[in-house]
Amino acid sequence: MEKNKELSFEEALKQLESSAEKLKKDGITLEDAMKSYEEGLKYYKQCSEILNDAKQKIEIISN
Image (cartoon, helix red, strand yellow):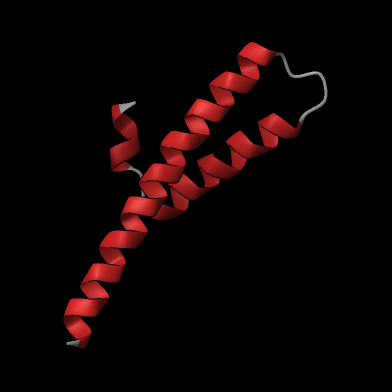
């Protein structure tokens, strides 16, 4: 999913929330649950990276 790197924080967060909602659905198959979980992890990592970058920039600016 190379497109993930191009998403904004808000877009990645929305996708992460969507993956989480899919996991909550009744009757989800194990295969679909695993797919949603893996997608969610990718979006979580992207959100985390964006937040860490922002934190570093704020710390640099604050000093």
